[in-house]
Every structure is written in structure tokens, then in C-alpha cells.
Length: 198
Ligand SMILES: Cc1cc2nc3c(=O)[nH]c(=O)nc-3n(C[C@H](O)[C@H](O)[C@H](O)COP(=O)(O)O)c2cc1C
Image (cartoon, rainbow, N blue to C red; front, top):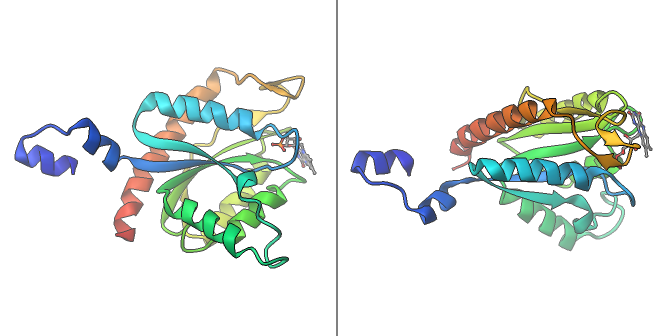
């Protein structure tokens, strides 16, 4: 729409702008009681909303009440989950390290969809004792199989220095640069990949 407006010499209206913005879901990867992921997701959402370049929203896996895949009839939950994913052009995964990998709830939620992930882009924000780096690298392997293009820049948060007493999230300033760099890449790749899906 932007190039068309330029050609026609008109400026985009506010409504058109919102319509043409990409939809980026910030996916909370943990579901346990007392989890830290909502604090991290809120930080990402706040920074992202200040940019005004996409429609960002928190997507909480816990809301979808997905049983372990194949364990029970979950047609309703699976449909709701796939519908939500289908409405998104890109993702930011909030990833926590469980036994050097991603949480079981995130893996389960990844397994519940296929087409709805395909040909989209994703960024990773991880946390753990070493920044959740091992979990993030495992996630990259899984995303490859789901045809999700994961971007390079990766804010990695420390449980020791970015969380007071391991519970209250107070990110060091340096992460802001990486977060914005990651969001730049997610937006660029999400827009490019959208052309493959239309
Ligand atoms: C089952 C389990 C395994 C964990 N294993 C690791 C680990 O291997 N490496 C690490 O850095 N942190 C590990 N942790 C610490 C978590 O990264 C930390 O508790 C984090 O807050 C979990 O994310 P959440 O609060 O969003 O659930 C583990 C925590 C749990 C519950």
C-alpha cells in the first residue's frame, strides 16, 4: 500500500497505516505457577509498542490450555491456538531454560501447529543462568523444521544480574539495544516472508 500511495502522491491515512502493519505475537514460553515470563513479555511489549512499527500482542500459551499432544481430544484448544497463530505474521519467543532446553509447554505448543508457523519470522528473548543460550539454540533447530526464519540478534538475560533476587525483572540497559535490533530484524523478515504466503 505504501508504494501505491507514493505513486499516487497521497499520504497514508492513520487507518490504512494500522491495517498494513504486521501482527507480531510475543509468545510466553512458560506456564508454571510463579513463572517469570510475563514480566519479560511485558518489557518486550512496552519497548515494541514505543516503536509503533507493528501491532504487537502478548500470546500466553497458558491461556490455550493445551493438553500434551495426543493425550486428550483437544480439537477446540488446537483450533483456537492455530487461529491465533494464523493471525500473526511474526513472533518473539520468550524462552526460559529448562534442563538446557526449552520448556515442555513451549515444545508442546510448537507441536500443535504446522502451517500456521510456516514462512514467518521469529526473534528470541531468553533467560537462564547463562542467558538461556542453550534453550535458545535448541529452539532454533525446532524452528528450522517449522519453516520459521529465526533472526540473529538475540537478547539473552541473566537470572543473576537482570532479575533482583531471581524474581523481579530489572533488565540491564544494554539489552535495550539488542531488543530493538532484534525487533528491526523480525519486522523486516516478517514483511518479506508475508509475500510468500499471499
Ligand atoms: C525444571 C527446571 C529446569 C531448569 N533447568 C535450568 C537449566 O538447565 N539452566 C538454567 O539456566 N536454568 C534452569 N532452570 C531455571 C529456570 O531457567 C528459571 O527458573 C526460570 O525462571 C524459568 O522460567 P519461568 O520462571 O518463566 O518458568 C530450570 C528451572 C526448572 C523449573
